[in-house]
Length: 523
Image (tube, rainbow, N blue to C red; front, side, top):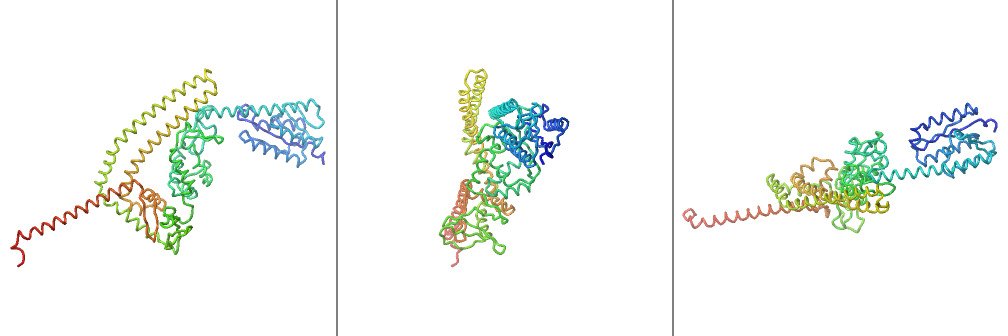
């Protein structure tokens, strides 16, 4: 049996980096070299070739090595042919494994082609010594390579760029050593929409996945995204301008953000507080929008004979038993919508102008604050440039440079966050007041024409919360809407007072007319 396998061999090809591939040490060239050695010089029969691509991870390389050693043991292969020692093993554990395989059978051999070394049980002491030395050198080579890779990654991070492939929504451009990440417009729109939809609190993870796919979102491979991919997407800090590498958060990424930090945080809040509805085939539009007015428990929805009913879940002691049809809840909310229909287009325009005029001073203050923050940021950047030059000239130590750089970067991050916050607050301020004004005036019309998800979004813009007690819905308006409602109520009250005064005046006129015209009165 042994004799029949004595000329069988397995080839093991391995490259460690792209540079090796570009300089002629590719897997095909290795395989060609090893086959020539096996067939022409030794008349070996090549049973199988094991290869590890340059892009394979360390765990993948170890897996292929283990599979190869298992194969040659199982099939009683006597010869293992590799290019060099550092192609076979990169650590002491693999070296021990290979040694044990040799020691188990005196006919087994490892052929290192380029080093002209054949290792076996009966090999001379100097050959074994060469093997031991080569293992140490291979381990040192890998350690040095890893160190250089880490240095390169650290430098890339220091420059504000991610040292790996960016997430979907970005693409890499530039030459080697100068590669940067820019927005990929084929995907960026979907990324922003995903955050906006989830942050609204109206979409579960599964519902979001289904909706994005329906609208045309695909992975880079053209496939439907998995639920886990959507979860990872919503956790990716890269989209608002930060980076995460080996568990460390870097806030000063140079890539252009797709979303704001505020939108990212809002999506995280929805996820962490479990505010998003769970996915179900019934899309209940008031789900997670109402609480029980008695026990503050969750209001649950269910379908009976095609009609959607809402009732208290009774997780706490509660006497509320009625089931309220969804249509009844809507009718009650329509009363709230109708309240705002008292605003005429002219009055709406007047309120808008009043809002702008009332906050002109606030806008001026914000403009001055932004100007001051931008000036401070540029001042810090100038200091950072000077420090960098001092580091290059070795005027300061690396520790001092890193400490001062960290302090400046932290202050710059705080400034950018303040600037972003001020801009968002100002923008949202006018969006809330001006859009809510229009929204409130046409709420019923908008509500009736929208999908359940869009209705939920509309309700979340107008109501802070809804409580259900004895089939009656008690709404609490959001602050901007509440202020607007107060102004509408003031207008209604003023109109009532005017009508009352007018009625009183008419009555007085009639009563005062009687004695002045006695001849017209009946006798």
